[in-house]
Length: 305
Image 1 (cartoon, helix red, strand yellow):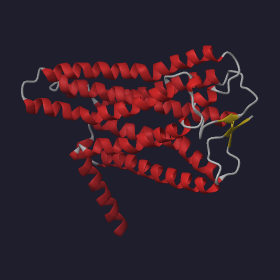
Image 2 (cartoon, one colour):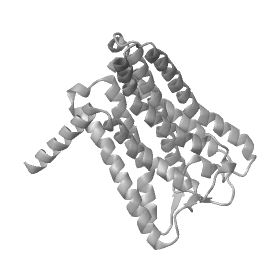
Image 3 (cartoon, rainbow, N blue to C red):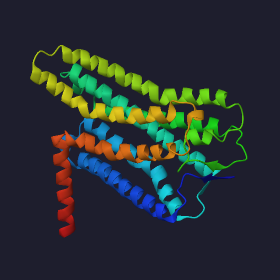
Image 4 (cartoon, rainbow, N blue to C red):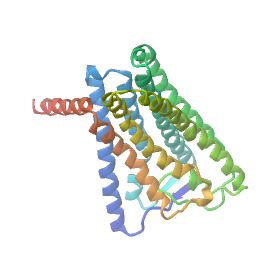
């Protein structure tokens, strides 16, 4: 059994524009996240839990985009834009799983910021490297486990004879549109799974920020409040970007799926968040900007030698 992707534009000239646009944004997103990972690995001063979380977030986003974007680019160049049933299920497992891991990592990072602001003296004792590695591993394992359960449930349902997916890749809303049985019952099950993967981490982030705000309000000096708030601004911006897109795509019934516009919105979200996250985290962080600059300098010097 094979599925056919129907979201690709028909005119050949639009195929060229799509290929060039996606290739450019994908290259920039991968480059930005690789630079973050390399900078954190090569700079001893960045070997702290906060930066390990940031490096892991970049690593997950590299894998997250690699699950779907190369396949999209290959399909643009092919006349038949198909994928097997097993290939579709595999793609969905890793796409949803790594996206869920992203959300869980953001929750872990919010807890890290909460401890740093609420208990600054005990921070090194509470947020150890061992704990940060365990939280990172747990985020990936739980994300993939929830995704595996969700995808196994979806692909156990009977599909209609129509095999066309109104999308660029296998995602939950367009695949659910192909299910023939009582869709509202299955939609509720999918919404429950999406809530576990998206809303629960968001609740943990909100709780952490509630305690952070309460702590900031007790700081008397303006400089102290500004320093505390500035450590959270980048993370908060990434949370709003990530969860705004996730909520729009997954926390709604599949009956509200719009085949003409939602695939492009999903494509922008899939490429946009990995592209913007490194920029958001480095623009306000002098240590990261310096580390990335030194990593680029070392690379240029090694190529010239």
